[in-house]
Image 1 (cartoon, one colour):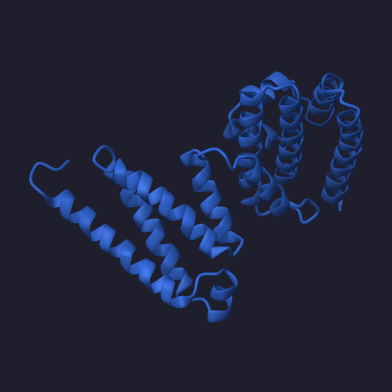
Image 2: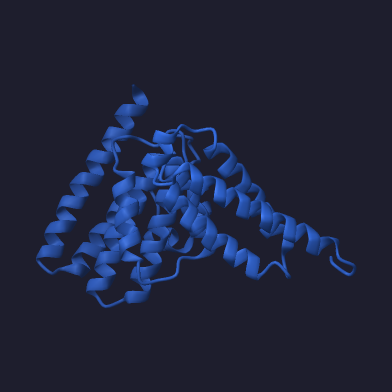
Length: 239
């Protein structure tokens, strides 16, 4: 009960600040909205906006987890504020800052989605979709794709998960001469992914837009890639 009350207070404060921010954006007052955002960061999280922008997503998660209370919700609200700040940066023609804020907001949202305590009161799927649309003109970093693959899998969006997985496999496959271990680990994870999908019923797979036959074909390809990698590693002179 205490946790729910705390979360609801956070969401209410976020919603109140968001309403004022939207009003300032409609009035084309981005600078005033920026000042309000800075105050909101401090009021909700006790953090300086410059620190929030400077920390990595993982460091930010550790910082928000100091008290062990409602970490997922705080991450989602922080990501929502960053999304609004990105809008303001775009209004001020600071496109590079807008990109970095949207990307950090996406990473935080994906990290929060992996938390067991992620609340049903915040629209994670909607926030992920909106941020992906904003970043549609950019190539996502590998670290973001790794989070996205896990998110799609957990959400039962298996076809989307497969698309991102093969982008990662192609990336690591191109670099396998320098780092075979990373490619090998991803192949192992991919094999477990498809083996788990084989245990699901046909309706679940169809809902995830990845029919059983495609699962079998993809698993065969993964095993072929793994065999090829093992054969290369066994060659004389291979590291």
